[in-house]
Image 1: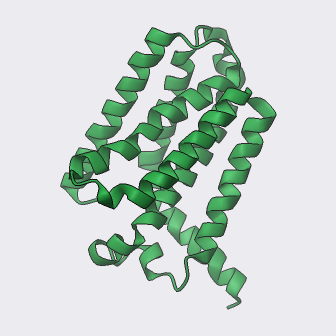
Image 2: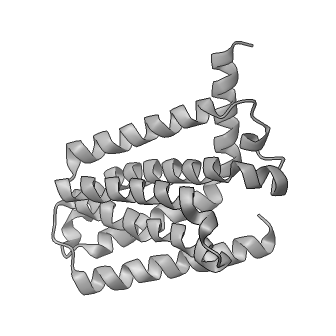
Image 3: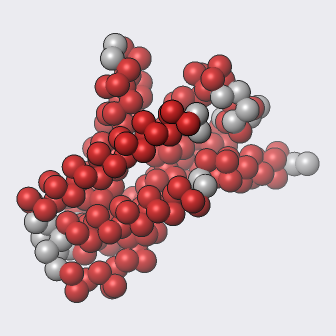
Length: 194
């Protein structure tokens, strides 16, 4: 088997392992509905839902892959059966991460206002720095909750595709509910050992 075929097969196996449609389908839909709830104009709902879903899928896969790549050293001890832990090289996965980031950026440059592009850049840079420094944070709960802040930001980035004003109070409430839902899921997920 050629290297390219093996690399593609590894990435396909990673996606099958880490992106279960039963979990990521509802999550993507939740974030799309949250994004629609952030804007004041509900007429736009049908017009940009497909674009929102595409953007959210790109964001979810990109940042899940980033999280998993940064967790490989600890996952080799706790989850040695995972595809990334068994991979001979992580190079292919880093290349896929860059490709996903470029696709996301391209979509935002084409459809979103510049503020969303800045928010996406800040989120990418912020999480990259967080993953590099998180082991210095002594409290486990803090280390678990900070990465969850990305989910409300995904909603804000997707909401910007409509180019409609975001209602601040509603946006704060919906973003808080998304964060709390993700925190609850994370706690349940950890208790089940998934």
